[in-house]
Amino acid sequence: PIKTVMTQPDPNAEFSITTVITSYNKGPWLAESIDSALIQEINHHEIIVVDDGSHDNTRQVAESYGNRIRYFQQEHAGQVAAKNKGIELASGNFIAFLDGDDRWRPTKLEKQIAKFKADPEVGVVYTDRLKFKGDEIVLASNKLWHTPREGRVTEYLIYDLFVPFSAAMVRKTHLDQAGWMSEACP
Image (cartoon, rainbow, N blue to C red; front, side, top):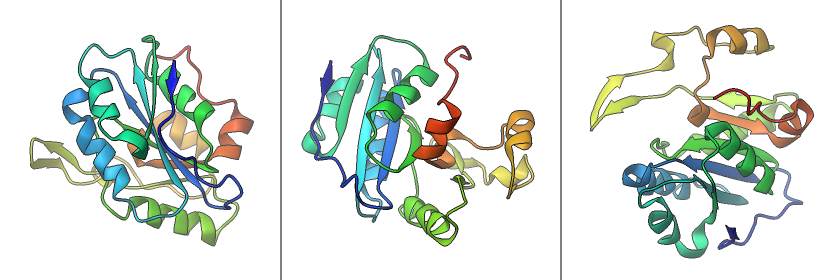
């Protein structure tokens, strides 16, 4: 059952964004994830938390945000199904993915949307990442394990898998044209 607790962004806004946060037993980290989405300084932004059948406190953490987010709980179906449910529920023209145990820097979405504004042909914008263990950085950048790509990158996506979900923002029209993500993959 869906519980809607936030006014959706204006669907007529050219650059409206939906952040899809997926969680399967990510309750201990979920508040940091939601907080990092809430501090983004952008207009027309909605945040949807898709709870993929968690057995922890994910629901309580999400509901503690009241009307600042939308919360949807489904039976456990896997992270791809949870991301697809978020896409289905999204009202934004752009979809940003954030896993329930990840967090963003404060200007992430602002910088990404600037790239989309600069070039209407761009379909995906991704960022580098920092990987933490506790408060210690253990991986300073994606650049340590892949070559940054621009232009037509589909071939590299398939072979390198160089874009972590929490780093990506995608035009919703592109997701709709591609048919979303295959739930046949785990």
